[in-house]
Structure formats: structure tokens, C-alpha cells
Length: 120
Image (cartoon, helix red, strand yellow):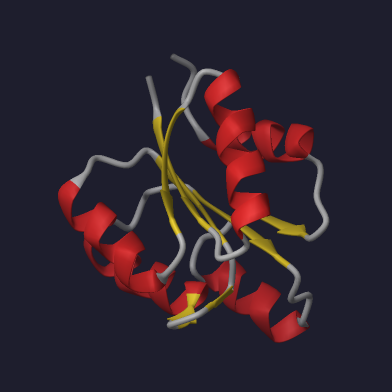
């Protein structure tokens, strides 16, 4: 089973995404802040990360940049209400293949994950 870290500060969105991905056969770990996500990343094997940009304690893109220094190849998907060209271009430079603006469909998120991860 593939482990997905979902980093999102909106509890309703976090629960819906986690439920949908669990039903799709993923093992889901959740975090609502950069700090808690970093603790997960240090202590767990993660196959992909889905993250919001605007988090209470910092930017999800800063978290991703930090992650890239130790794990450059983990697939990342940004789910965000921020649709600024600068954010999208920074995400692309950090290797993000999918930038899903909120509101997004859970089916699109699952499709994005399926396209990023090797088949199991």
C-alpha cells in the first residue's frame, strides 16, 4: 500500500481528502501544519505528498523545498486556494506535476496521484 501525506489546514477538506484516498486504497497520513508534516516526513516512509500552500505556520512550498533537500523524488501535488502565477511557477520549479486549485474534485486528485505513482 502506498503512503500519502496530506497537509491541509482546513479540517473539512483534510477529512474529505483522507477519506477519499483511503477508499481508493492508499494509506493516508494527515497533518495540518508544516511542523507536524515535517515530523511525519522525518519519521515515516512517504510515497507522495499532497499539500496546501497556505498553512498556519508557513508555506507548504517552503516545506516542499525543505523536503526536496533530503528526498528530491517524492511526487508532490499542490492543492490550494492560492492561484498566483508566482506560486504555480515556484511549485513547478520544485517538481510539482499537478497544481489543483480549490475547489477541486476528489476524482481529479486521485487521477493526479495515479499519474505520479508507480502502479502497485
